Structures are given as C-alpha cells and as structure tokens.
Image 1 (cartoon, protein in one colour):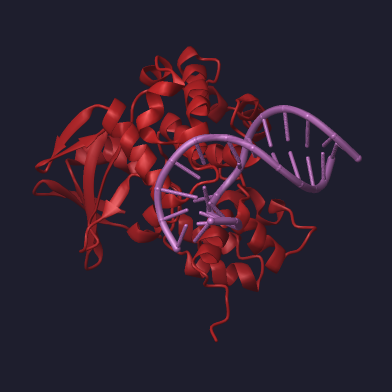
Image 2 (cartoon, rainbow, N blue to C red):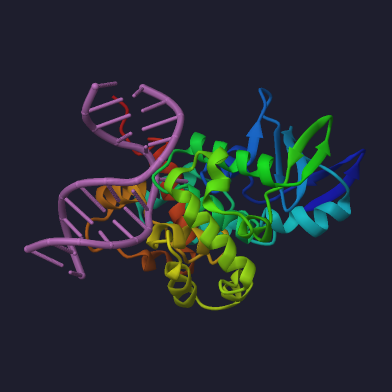
Length: 281
DNA sequence: AAACAGGCCTAAA
DNA sequence: TTTAGGCCTGTT
C-alpha cells in the first residue's frame, strides 16, 4: 500500500480488498453515512473524517500522521484480506459468498463504542440502531467541528457511567437502557477490562462478557469480533442461522474456517442479508 | 392492527 | 438443557 498527502487529504493506493460500501454497510458499524455521491462521513476514535473512492484511489481527509496514527489501524490495513479470503473458501458456497463479499474488512473500532452499539443492536433493526447511537453521541458526546458541520464523538464510558437509566430516555432505547448503564459502569470501574480481554483468550473474553447483564452469546461474539478484534469469534444471529441451516445443517462448526471464522462469518452474513444466495426466478 | 425486528432474561418443564 | 413469554420502541 502506498499513500501520500494530497492537499488536505491522504491519497491511498491499496493493493488489497477494500470496498467502502461493503465495509460500512455490512453491519459492523453504525456511524458512517454516504451522501448521494458515495462519499462517506463519520466519526471514529474521537475524530471526524470523510472518505471516498475516485478511479483506483481512495482519499481520506486529514494528514498522513492522522492516517498513520488512527486510520491505518482502524481499517485494519495491516491484514491481508485477499489471502484470508482464499483460506475460507472451503466449499462452493463459501467461494460464492466470499467472492460476493470481497472488499469487506473488519474495522478496529473503539472497544467501548462497539460494546455499547451491539448491546443496542439486540432485537433491533439497523436504521433504529443508528438512530439510537447517533442520539447518544449528540446528547452525551463532545462536539467536533468538521467541514462546516457539527459532529459528535461517541461518549466515554465514564460519562455514561455517571448517568441513571432514566437519563437515557431521549435515546428511546427501551429496555436496553439499564444494560448500557451497567456496561458503562463495568468498563469505567475496570471490572470489565476490554484491553485486558483483548490480550487474553477467546473463551475468557466470552465468559467475562456474558457475566454482564444484557450480554448473551450473540452480543458477546460481536464484541469479541468487532471490539476485541479476535477474528475467530463467530456471532450467530437469525441471518446466520438461516445461512447455516441452508448450507451446512446441524453438525456445523465454525472450526471449518480455521482461525478466520469471524471473517468467514462476515462473508456469510453479508451474502445472506443481500439475498445473493437465492436463485433468481 | 398485530406482528416483527441482527437478543436477553427468567421461569418452568 | 431446552423452550415460551415478556420486554421498549418504531415500522409495516
């Protein structure tokens, strides 16, 4: 990969899977939005940014030092996805699914933000998840001025930890409010140490996360994959249940994908949700 | 209008 | 250990 400063943007020449729409629309994150030209704007890691593709190059707002310190890792650019994509092609179905999802990358999101987002995601649809997360940022985050607009950072766990569930009423997140407060307090107090879990093992992380009220198997696996960046986590939701049932049956195990089950999961999920597995009639 | 949406918790077999 | 019902809210 090559990059260089180009005005107030960094120009990227990426020689690996990298599809902005798939990365942002595959359901792993909730704060990036495209305009009518496919230009994405969002806030992550406390910074606002804007990025788009033009011809064969990508452009991201900011300096090369921003890119090096934040965005390189955020977009997981140290990992070779085209190689991984080959290793998860264990059968014809996965060949098709991974081809369809080529360009997806697992973002290295802020751990607390991802934890909170996936607590909110339970029994919910994407538009509403995005709305709740956005309202949470607008109400409790810090303002960031960017290109003539005011954006808001995702609030720190310490800020949310000081609130009561009633204070989250403007979010309209219903029964998830106490789950959010509990998680914020656990993170803030150090009782739930996401950094430590990220350095530890998958089983430990799963066990610790599931101790939290409001975090079960599905959310815990999402957190392990998207917040702790353990690519062997394998969240199973209703879409994944359908995909597994249709293509593998009852004796399925994620171990068939080796250490990259989480990335295989993203291809399966994205494929299933796009309806691309259905035969057109 | 009733059912459902990218689960989780609790109670009851 | 597996299963049903309830849960906030918004949308269809």
